Image 1: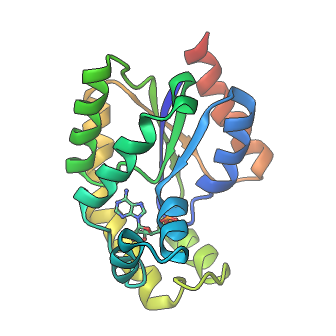
Image 2: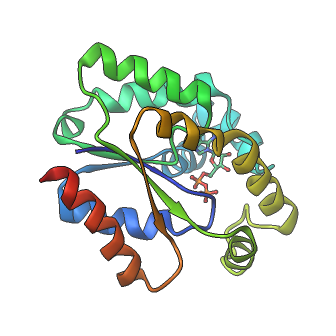
Image 3: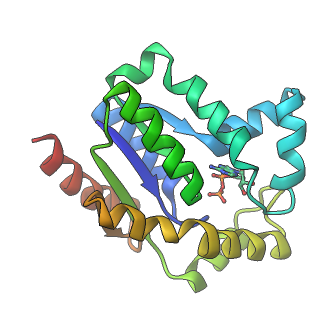
Length: 186
Ligand code: ADP
């Protein structure tokens, strides 16, 4: 299966992604993880990206799209993947569509994890990652609302969007995600 996993920062995508890739044998493509690894390795791209990440802003589309294009060509992606944190803008979604059209490997589903904004702020403030100061958190939530939320309509129009409630225990949420994916994988 080829899945886009979408949801605001703090929705719990990372936790669910880990379970989903194990259950459905997919590669896990987290752009946040890739950028943090590049930053820690002090690569050129990592240092460029760090300026945006530490301000809670999105990294420019060209950088992200290039990273993903390279990653999708790797052998482990041929059996399916879960895109976690990408696409985050309409331009990224269009770039992805074009890449997948060329390979004739369309997406199977876009899974949205829904969590109310008040809850997100609480969760993020309690998490304590270096980029989790109140100002940066606010900026990331704004970036989500303004740049990423429009993707929901984009994918709805393409009949790919499936949304699940992201409130509850990890097991409850995982069961909701499975219900959606089991229906798709048949
Ligand atoms: P979160 O914990 O907010 O869900 P991630 O771990 O996915 O965030 O990403 C952390 C940071 O990396 C983002 O705030 C952003 O600066 C950058 N980033 C990750 N993915 C993308 C993307 N697809 N486009 C632009 N920037 C991205």
